[in-house]
Image 1 (cartoon, rainbow, N blue to C red):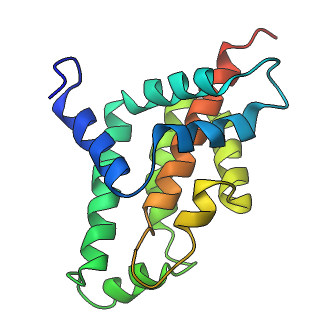
Image 2: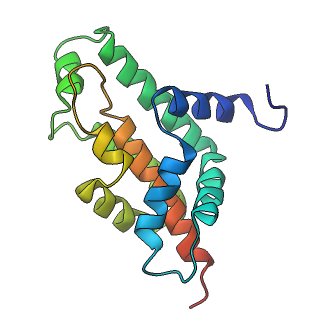
Length: 162
């Protein structure tokens, strides 16, 4: 166990990893969002900003809660009709996006626009998570990952001089 990482942060990172999402995957989304606005932006800088976002307790709580709900849906342990709603990732459900907004809210209004855009185009790992393969449920995870990327991109934008 790494001693300088709190238990909540460590669990959130473990869950992302177990669900097939790496920090590099999220950093690539950040680069996608910010490459046209920040000269010489590197994947390493993007990953540093992802790590900073992941240090926020609100983010850790959202990751753990959302992934737990996805796992329960995969294991068919939810009450009907919630079970079917999450398994099918119904478009009008919306609670998954609301949870994601708790992450982007940490970095202000630019986070909302970044999130809306990345949620619409679903590049990189988001396309894979949103594939609905019939086995894995990522109803919350795809939105959470997009929100982390949007927040990290917003963090980079806030650090830029006007």
